[in-house]
Length: 121
Image: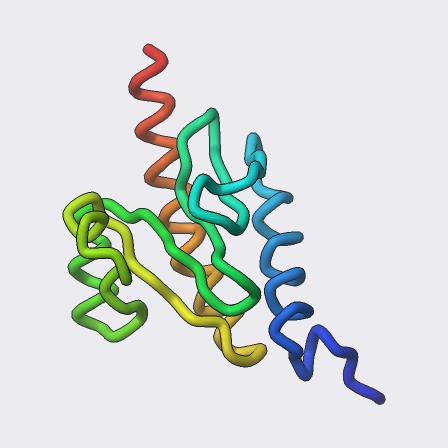
């Protein structure tokens, strides 16, 4: 069976695969990001954004941020100003990294969803 582009992975195809998955999460919307790229929100709270086809920035709780950095699952956010806010960076390089990105995005989504639900009460 021939492998499709989303399996073998041009950067654009890999990002499109991930973004399609993110947009299927309940209550997720997308919008242009203020620094370029696309941001994703749940109930109006940004939990991730992309810069080009390969770079993702994901916002985690401080506990999860420390854990994924310690385990080497993400890198410190490229902009130091966001490091204190829980942001980490991740590079999508091949199909396997899309699956790892989904794990980070799921953590960020769940945290943002809890935070937004708590603030709406």
